[in-house]
View (cartoon, rainbow over the protein chains, first blue to last red):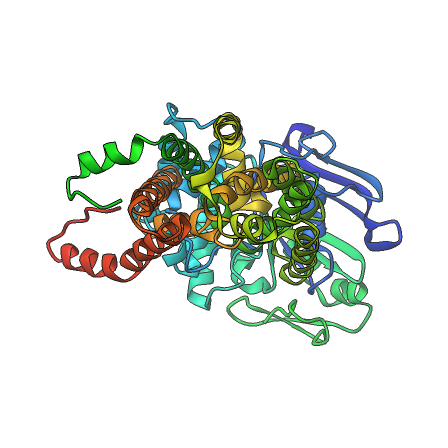
Length: 265
Length: 288
């Protein structure tokens, strides 16, 4: 793998605050086009990783490079789908307007005579299969439909790296499977690298190139078959963990019931 | 004065008086400002913060009256400081209802003290609390117009980043937008718009121009610029109609303005959906 293909590289990275380290000694590299799941219990520091990559939080120590440079705020090569959005049923603004802002929201002025953002936004909505939602109010959309719009908002500026913070957390199993398939198809067609925070490894497992576990202040990254082993997870969690695969390839991680949200079943 | 039932003659009658001309001039600027800024207030769910600013402004206006200064200056000074303080406290500060409520109650009490120390208590208190547009001076009209133009230019400059940060703050921040600075700019815009709107409807009725038109407009359109235009049209219509009716009737302008925007809201909230549903039966949509 050439250095050009390395989108993210971290060496001995420590994240958090000087008086409260969230995780330490993380060394990993993410290459162009890879789909990576970031798994870990609530409060383990998954979103902290994203904040470091986005340049919103400085690492405590160690080195981190994104596109061969230190992370900086407003990197146009990164698209971001946060976990939290403030919309409710009263938000009447149409979806297209939100996606347009993903393209032109950084520009000053009214933009009265610029329609480029509208065209690009419509194209992106089409790419995520949401063109028919363009003129629907955000507040009237279902969870799955909203996630498509957020995905379009993140993709509209044509980023090379996509950070998705639990995009499927409020979806049922069917909706989650559809969304993950869509994300996979879109990032493959656009050759985008994606890091996706998830609680459940199984729905995303068929699409993964790498998995990153963040547990107990430690970070383990590698191919799924390397990381998702009884010995590997036992060492990471510090307790006996058993990884069992069924005939359909589903993984059950047993012995970590106290670590809410990271079970593999 | 009585209606002639001929709007043109009635309007000529209203506008022959300089105090009514001033009221229409200032009211027009205030309605445009409130209609525009109000949209961001509604979008950011900062109605309570905006309400608090008007109460903070009350003590500023009362303090100005006490020392013999123009109440508008007191309003501007206090609301600007209050707006800056609320925004600088943090990105979620505008939604800290309890803390804001505590501060606004204290500021209201301070305003009452200032007014009690002033001999002309009743008249001044009434005009600050409920507005007194019919008594606006030429100097204040001029000040309102100049400030209005400056505020609208500022809004047009920050329009898209402010809209982005208001609608999806975390993504805007990740995109490098200075969301805290935009929050401060927003609260200052609210502070200034409030300071001038108080002249028309007073601190207690500020919602009638700062929130109701935008909230109504939001029900009628789905694109921000269109919502803002409708919000301004509603605020303008209410202000002009309110002034017009108040000229002939012995009741306060602010009462008519609040009533008109309220009727607008009720109509749009409860009647328009039925019309929309009725029309959708024919495969038409005339509103969005």
